Every structure is written in structure tokens, then in C-alpha cells.
Length: 418
Image 1 (cartoon, one colour):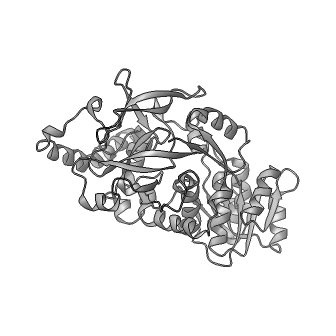
Image 2: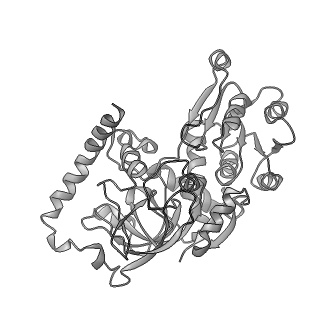
């Protein structure tokens, strides 16, 4: 039953996209250039990308035909790509995803081309040569949720990209140079020298902001902003706890401070991460290996608990801690992904009697939120420099993910590509 519903949803979502591409095909036969023949403004016809083949196997660097954007899409020369736990979940087989694929989903880069028949407004907004940042949720702009303004629930993104590894016509833009076989895309497949991004997922990056550090705006900061702005509906004066202060969690600390939190409590089991948290705006730190995290949070807040608690690890233990750390009527917001099938416990009676709100949050809303996030960074309210703790080369991506898996990266690592 579930599979038939899923197929029905895919057919319904595909209809407008496939109809659009069919309608333009008849008038654009001369533009049907195969991937083999596509050059970027007379430049290169191929690129390198980092490929995930199967769980727990190393990534490999492969050559691809230059990815060709379609209508409403932008070809970006990738400058930097963040190293995120979501990629790691896929690489470890904890989250099912189509393979082989190119991972990497928080990017910055330079616009080099637009798809044929792209609206002139998009071309004007993102001219060739402009600097851009990409959000990992790439809204279609047309589905039930996008029309309502809830782009973080975009039907096409989940039905096509997360379920199939494609863009919204049901096709990938990545093909191996050696044999022409398709490779799937985790979001835009950002761990490559070029990537195709739907224009709805892009925002202009001011030239005053660096490519490398700004890559984290599209996922780590994007996720933190969505959790506190939309899920928690945080107000100035709220007390906030963040459980797990790695790349995304440390971004939550800064967003909470930017939104006027009275207390920002960082919880982790690594002292180096807690030290970094103090630099990023935490008013208090708790090492959960040395003391009970929930008891300490309540002590700090005069026995009440926090107004908002954020869980950024995706573990059953920290899920439970998050729900226990909030005051009566408080909000426990879950942003950490877990392995498929993972479950957590909750005190049902307290949930009911004390009106505890448990909310899931995945990213933010690209068209309305990403420009605001860029402004926070541009104004200096969000400190990009202190959030990025490691920069590495394209060829060092494997090691970066290994170190992330072993807890050796304090904040966020970013791969510098071109």
C-alpha cells in the first residue's frame, strides 16, 4: 500500500515537470546537446567529482562529463563544500540513498551558466560570475508545501532527490566520463568541481564573504536557523540548551544568541567542543560525561528547565535528555538525524500533563531564509571564522569524513575545491 502511494505521489509530482520539458523539447531540438558535447562557455567539457559507491567503502575521485543544467537550474563552479554528518550517515549505510552518488550538500561557488529556457528573472538575479551559496533543501516552488511557504517540506525534494537521487524531472545531471553511466546526487552533489543547483535553492553571496567559511551557511547555519526561527519560534529572553555542539549544534549557539537568548547552555562530552562553544556565545557549558546534563540544566535555570532545547546528535539518549531538559510548556526540537529505525523513549504522562512540545525540524526555507542567513554573516552577528575549524583539499575529503566519524572535528570542516 505504502509503495503504491509513493508511486502515485511521484507520478503526480512529475507531471508538471515532464510536461514542461516535453513542451520545450519540440522547439529546442538544436539545443539537445548530449552530456558528452556540453562545454562551459567554450571551456572544459569534463570535471572531477567525489563518488560514494557503497557503505563503509572509501570515496573515489572520478571524472564526469560536465553537468548540464536544465530550465530553472544554474551551473555553479564549486569553490567550497562542507563536511556534514548527513553525508556520513549515507556513507555508513545508516540512511538509505541511491548509489553510486556524489555527496556534499552545503556549497558556495560562482555561477557559470544557466539552463536553456531559464526565466530571465533568474538570469538577472544570478548572472554569470556572481557568487552564490546553496541550501541543501532545494525547493521546487510548485508543490502543496512550497506554495504555502513551507519549503522545508517540499514534496518534490523528498520524493525525487532524497528518495531517488535525482532532480525534479526524475533524472540526474551526473554521468561518468569513462562509460556514461549515471551517478546520483545527494542534494546538488556538491563535492565536485561543478554542480547543478535549482535556482530556488540559491542566494547571492556578497563578495565581502569568503567562499570557504560561507559554505556552512547552506546546511549547518540553515538548519540552526530553521530550528530556532520556525520550529521553536524562539523569543528574545528565552533560555536555550543545545545538546551536541558540533558543526550544526555550534551554529545553534550563535543563532540563539543572535535571537536574544538570555541563557545559552552547551552540552557535549568533549571539553574541546565545550571550550569552542564558549567562544561562540554559550553562557554555560555542561560535560555530560562528568555530570548529569538534565540536572545541571535545571540547576542553571533555577529548577525550571529551558524554554527551548535543541537535540543535534540523533541519538536515543540525547533525545530523551532533550525532552527532560525543557520547562513545563517548553519545546524540545530535534534536528539530529539517526540511523533508519532508531527509536527513543518519552515520559508520556509528563508530555501530556505538562504540555511538552516535541518538534522535528529539517533545514529551513531557502527562498525566504537563506538571504536572511547571509545577512547575519555579512553583519558579523554570525561568526563564520570561528565556526569552521578545519579546511582541507579536495583529495583529503575521505580523511575529513573519517575524522568526523571519530569525533576529531571540533566545529565544521570544509573542503576547498577550486
